[in-house]
Image 1 (cartoon, protein in one colour):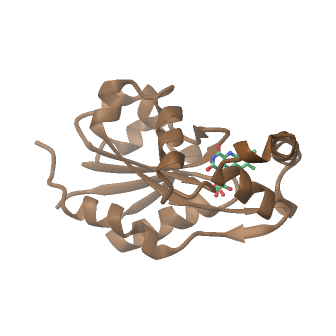
Image 2 (image 1 turned 180 degrees about the horizontal axis):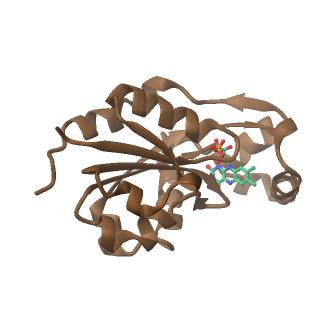
Length: 185
Ligand SMILES: Cc1cc2nc3c(=O)[nH]c(=O)nc-3n(C[C@H](O)[C@H](O)[C@H](O)COP(=O)(O)O)c2cc1C
């Protein structure tokens, strides 16, 4: 039987929520990136790695990037969890560009990537994250209205509030993909 592990790194819980849903659906093991070493992943054929998006970077991506040589013979899947709506191709292009700074082209080819939409509660943000979001908000308010992107507009509309776009059904394409995989030879 193919052995699958879901590994997540999350600050505020939305990536973890998706990771739990995926692990439940696939009846497989769930690991917190901060509590494992790459050697723990040795017994698995398929690794689903999920990370929250922070300023274009993906939490926990080092697991795949730094350890690609050890992991490349496995089925590798990455999901990002961020506020930007992945239904908007401009947003996914931006995420992919950001990933391109960490993942080399061979890594990008070997890893199947999915994008899921997360959540934010400004009341619960740590000080550094609050300051980063305040700076971003300030920058957007200074922009010419004609130059605002959909993402900017959404940031302005939701700033300071609590919003949650996480939903279990969004994991369906990833689940479908993993179920269609075969044990790597
Ligand atoms: C400081 C900061 C930077 C963020 N940067 C991005 C980003 O670049 N792209 C994005 O889509 N979402 C961004 N977000 C939103 C988070 O990705 C979103 O809240 C996600 O659900 C967090 O996942 P987590 O709860 O698992 O940590 C940012 C949030 C904070 C607080």
